[in-house]
Image 1 (cartoon, rainbow, N blue to C red):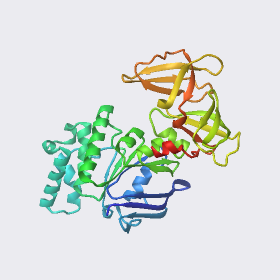
Image 2 (image 1 turned 90 degrees about the vertical axis):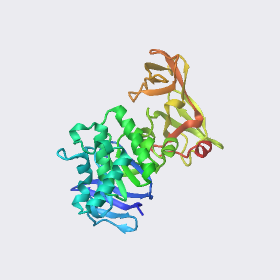
Image 3 (image 1 turned 180 degrees about the vertical axis):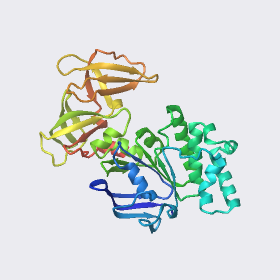
Image 4 (image 1 turned 30 degrees about the vertical axis):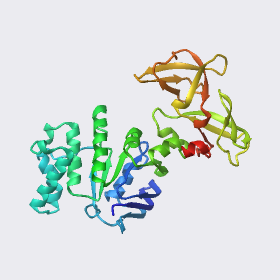
Length: 368
């Protein structure tokens, strides 16, 4: 089995606590993506799984075996790094065969594995070339092939696409997704790019300050973020946040007073929170409706971006915070300098308390 289990895993460098009590189950054959901002611990967590860093506390298992003390070569993992780390004096074939030679694998077996891997990655015509004669995407495929040829139980990717240009990243994302579908192997992938996470993952692990904020499918994290941090990190453009306060409870939900918007009746339950409690209302750009308006509560449009099939309208938040964003299909009637009123869709808003925890989601949305 190529499952991975982390039980209260910690990593401390000197006086700095990097990974904090991480509990995580990764099933056999899953494609799991670690995502989060720079410095959140995602690459360190991957290196702990690979055995490139030692665990300070806790237990790490691969299959049924606790591997805390096992060296990397005995864990059955293959790793693809951000830098291709190819040997420039070796051909593609020699680079892919190098790890097998170090393991003293039989020559016939090395040839069979390299050729089989080359067919999967469509590298057969490039086997006699050296890295300097390859494009960035081809070099990344060779780096993947070198890891795959060893037939690891788990493939680990540490931001493998960050050195590629935008169009090549899209192409390589699709190739990695197809590779996973073909092999069915367990893959763990680190990225700071939430678009990569959303498009590749069966399961996303959102990290923040060395802790796991939320684990779930891309759909679950987008529709039902557990914290304000996850809500703001997952989704592009990012979720809008407006200051709000609890105006009162209702049988079917609650009423909130939203700064610059007014009172809204929402299907969320506010639990034990008392009237007047400060909240944050989150609404995604596609669920923020606009209407022409004037007066003190109107928001000014400061920029309109035309992207072909859709339009982003940026609004001054008035409190010095990030600009609010409205997304709609093109063409758009909105122009810079217009003043508008905001009308969040009550069925698609999110409420967060002062600690950034999500209040219970609307029943209808949770069932969607």
